[in-house]
Amino acid sequence: ADMFANEEGGPEPDWVTTEREQFSDFRDLNKDGKMDKDEIQHWILPQDYDHALAEARHLVHESDVDKDQKLTKEEVLDNWNMFVGSQATNYGEDLTRNHDEL
Image (cartoon, rainbow, N blue to C red; front, top):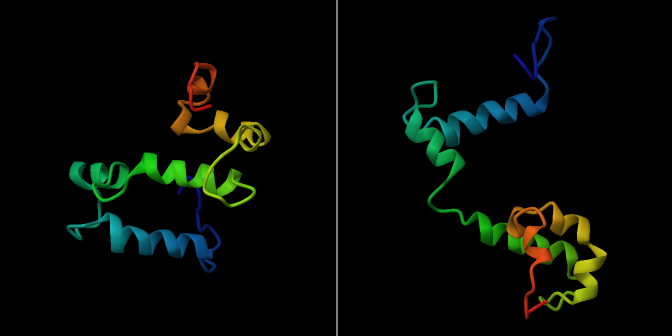
């Protein structure tokens, strides 16, 4: 109800329907209509998903202009705002340290 309240009784927006399906298909693992501690933990920290790897792939995909799967200093600097806002760089902290690979 914080994000959508169907006060007029009309049809739900598509995103609400999608969220309901996501909840019933992937979040509510024991199908009791609510999320318990284990289900919340699985949702936030899934065992089969590597957040760091996904973020690194995202940064390379978005910044690698020549698509050689390697980032040059120029590619990183041209997309500095993406790196500064990334969890992979601890929100920019890792960019200020001396690194041989940079």
